[in-house]
Length: 107
Length: 119
Image (tube, rainbow over all chains, first blue to last red; front, top):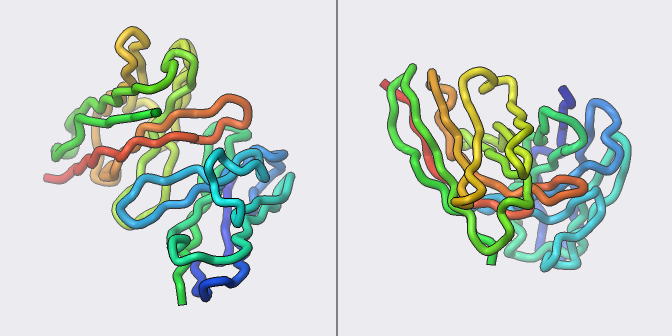
């Protein structure tokens, strides 16, 4: 199985800060890497797919990069509504797996 | 507008069974792979199972293989998850999700249905 790790597990940042979350796969997954945002009590929401493609309607302050085993999600200017947990997910091979999540708190 | 509405969750004893349903609307249901993803209370996301658009291919996570069965009825735009021999660690909110073709992200999610396995 492909194991996904994320760092950090949590972070605290101020409105306007640039925030970067890292996701690593235990083997190469090309660009079959997706990012989701989950706010408390809500279903997850797709932000980025194919490592760097912004989902339709997604805010342009979110961007993704990477390929192979190392990926990043960047929020260019953190907004109050970005308080949430972010998960990466590999869809390269079954069983599909998620990272453990990164909780973003607003300072 | 894409809508996914799960139902069928509830309280069940260990070893019991439950059948979840997901009613889909707002898109051409038979053209999409569909999935179930679960989330234990306070925990992260876990992929459970997926089924191809025609229903001929199914895939399962190791923790549910042999106990859960995914199926679909394209005439009724409905996805199912039959869960047998339930365990306490199956307790979770179960989400129905549509899979976008290509790089296969989950592009739409339902609001989930809670399954509690407890004696």
